[in-house]
Image: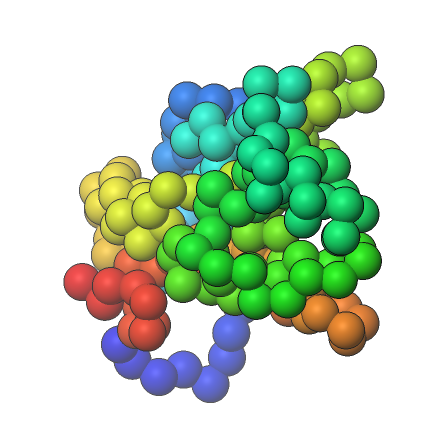
Length: 192
């Protein structure tokens, strides 16, 4: 990697709502063409967890979730839907903190986060069933696959980061966290 004195951040224009099995590389290619943007060697593509999870089909209809006794009891304590709590527990290795309105867990990927990163915002329209979106199964693996396809597509070596916004419990605001990476040094991601 070479050092630079400047960072340029460009949004890929016109990415549509992503659905299960959508080809993210094709969507990115079409968006870059619309914006007349040509990737250069060393560019880093940052994709949100939400579009990656949607493309991977990580959407769950809450009507299909049967909460366990543990989830029902914990849901009463944290004042959340027992079906959602069941999903949170199924994606976690331990509960770190539970109090009314707050459920902090250690996700199976090692992240300590609220609600195991399960998202219910902007995942279904009001006329659709109540749904929840889980994190990608293997964010580093997905980043590596995307990196390979994007590098091949554009004929230059690029990097990929899969980013999620983490709320900070008992603090205001959120911060972006790389939950998967390929082609950039990261404690969790691959640099290859």
